[in-house]
Image (tube, rainbow, N blue to C red; front, side, top):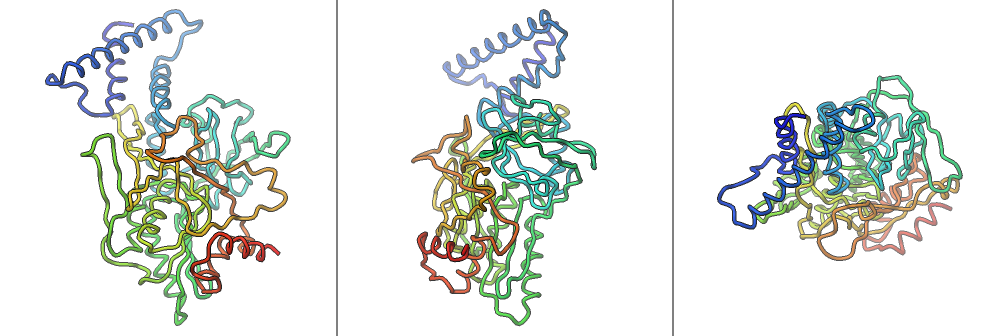
Length: 445
């Protein structure tokens, strides 16, 4: 490889390290200059290794793949949520945030170099095929994917509509690996679903994409219309198994229930990077009582909403502890080379509570009872704090995650039924965990 090529690749890697900012400043202190000199030494080492691999590896390697893998390795070493996206993956990500994309319909993360299901998306092929939160995907169509980056694994799961794929899944309690066959489809995410439960408005928010807030406004207006002369006692906002999404949508959704005050604080590496988002006047529910349901599958944007409404005492948070993903990922485009997803800040609730590796603790803990056939199959609750290489909590003891099971049948949904009874005044408004457990047992009987 010519020196000019080394210079190009060195520049590319350095660009990622700098994350789009100015790399060096001639006015920096001597210590900064020394650090810069050390970076150049390391880049020379990278160039030497790259040259040796290209010259002596047993078969001719793909140069672009070598560089992409190197960048991926650098970002993956930071935390589970920083990664490199090549041009195609970046384009797919942009399509997904618009609410329509092709695939299986699952939210995944990486745990110990294994793809882990955070939650199947409601109404998608993955959910219909029986994939569960906590499942570990180890093979795709018989090909071992252990060790692939998250983006590489996701890319393999994508494919033409109506084509099938076999997922080999490790599930706690199952003696053998499960083979789950899924037919790919166009995933059209309707982020908000709603209905009227007699005298209570029920709103299910499954993700935070570009359509979430506008769909929420429509849902709330529709609930009022359907209720007619019935006096609504309140609303249930269901954020269970909502893996998050766009920050601006989380802020807008929180604002829909607030008249004033902070919604979320984001703090970066430097003090000047701290940002605060505030609510504007206008409560779309007219001050009605609100219960927000969360569980171990509620992450990121979901936790921002739950934390904001909890701190302002605008809603009663009910369910089990959330996932605990309290970090901000900034998408930094790299032109024709795609983009990087880089963790740049932490989320804090209005009362200055960190979400990272801690999650949101519900005001009233209501655990969902697992059916007997699933008790040995659903993996132990694991949240952000259990992910290898996760960003550590800024202070205090780490604890995040809980069960993410939600039954399809409403009559078996302990958490939802408790929320409905709570809003109707059938349960004392100051009821705590013990009362919730007692009612849960009654409902199960």
